[in-house]
Image (tube, rainbow, N blue to C red; front, side):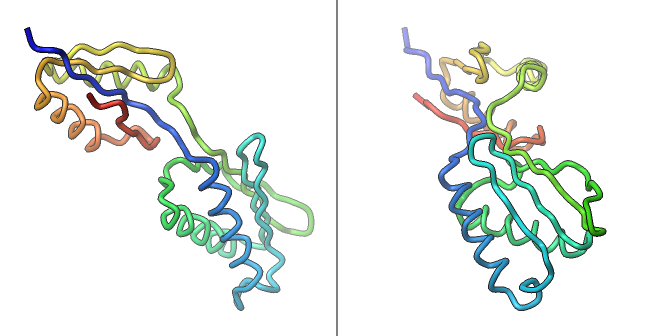
Length: 165
């Protein structure tokens, strides 16, 4: 009897790379000519993994977000891991955006992903283990098919496939 192969579906973020991307973005914000005297600020709370962006207008806030996302891409952090909440008005006519780093898969989404895999009738077994899904099959080709299927879907968070064996 052949040994079953498996992999885990997870959503993880390297927080050191997030911090590095923030440092680079903050440095560029201070140095860039068009944003230097704009009064916009970008702060990152390491403990709670929350970004706070303060800018005089939505346009400038969009530019700062673009800088941060470009630094994420350069540091190989998926931009989908950053979820921005809507603008809040701040003092002095400024706008404030708060962004959270999403790490891990919540219960509702993990059940949805599991349901999507089962709905495709792949010849695999799935098992929810905390904030990850273990997918097991006798056929490695079937596991590759599941990975391809999940990459084509948009669940709103970045998915990684680990412990492939």
